[in-house]
Image 1 (cartoon, each protein chain N blue to C red):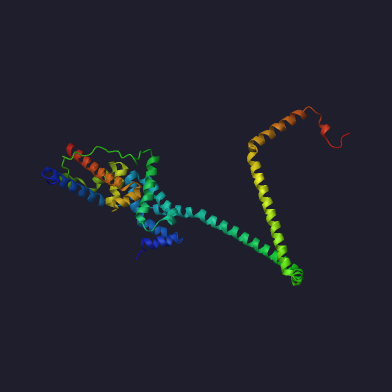
Image 2: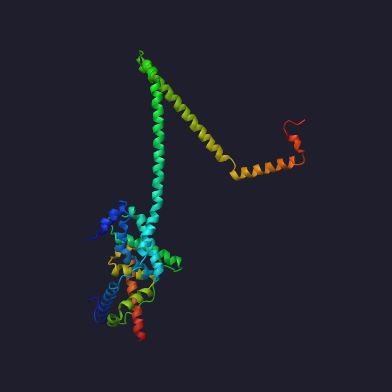
Length: 183
Length: 168
C-alpha cells in the first residue's frame, strides 16, 4: 500500500527529499492540468507547475498542517500561473472585477446544455473565459473546493469568489446561448 | 405572494439545472498528464535547490569545528599557565587573610578591566562619530589624485638627481 500524503509530508519535513517524489506523483496531474487550463500552453503549464513544486518544496517548513495541503499547493500554483500570465503580457484582473456581457435570462439554454457540454466543449468554453473565472470554476467543480478554500487559494475575499463563480457560470451560459442562436 | 411564480420559477429551475450541468461537465474533465520527463526535471530542480543548503551546512560545520579547536587550544594554554602558577597561588592563599586578599585583587583586576572596556567603547564611539563626519571615500580618493597630480606637475621640471639620496 502506498504512503499517505501525511506520511510523505512528515518524511519530507524530516529531510527525506525522496519522499517529495511521492508528493509529486500524487499532485503532478492535478497541478499541471490546473496550470494548463489557465495558461493554455503545455510548455508554460509545465514551467509553472515545476516552479510551483519547487516553491512548495522550499516552503514546506512553513506549511501549516491545520489547512489542507492541496489548497496550500494550489495557492502556490495559482501564484505561479498569475506570474506567468503577467509575464506573457496578459492582463489579469485581480481587484477590479470586470463584468462581461451576461446571458439574456429569457433565453432558455438548459435544454441544449445537456447535449452541448461534452468534454471538448466545456474545455473550450473554460478556455475562452478570463482566467479568474475559469480558475474559480475549476477549483470548485474539478477540485471540489468550497468558496472559503478557493478564497485561500486565490487570495481574494469569499464574496469575490462567489461573484466569480456566478459570473463564470453566466458567461458559459451566454456563450452557449450565443452558439444556439447561430445554429 | 410567492417569490417566484409562473415563467420566473421555470426560468429559475432552468438556471439551476444549467448550473448543475455545467458543474457536472467541469467535474468530469480529465486530468492531463505532463510530459514524461516532468517528474525527473522537478526532482532534479529539488536536488539542485538543496545543494546550497548542504554547502552552507558544511561551511557552518567547518566554522564550528575551527572555533571548538581554537577554544580547546586556549583552554589547554590557560590550564598550563594555571598549573605553572599553582604553587605561587597556593602559597598566596594559605597565608592568613589570603582569600580576602585574593578577592580584593580579583575585584581590582575586574575594575581595571571594566575601565579598559569602557575606554575602548568610548574610543570606538569617537571613531564612529569621526568617521560619520569624514568625507566619502571617493572624495578622499579624488583629493589624493589631485594632490598627486599637483606634486607631479611641480616636480616634473626639476632634475631627477635633486631628489636622490647621497647626492653631492
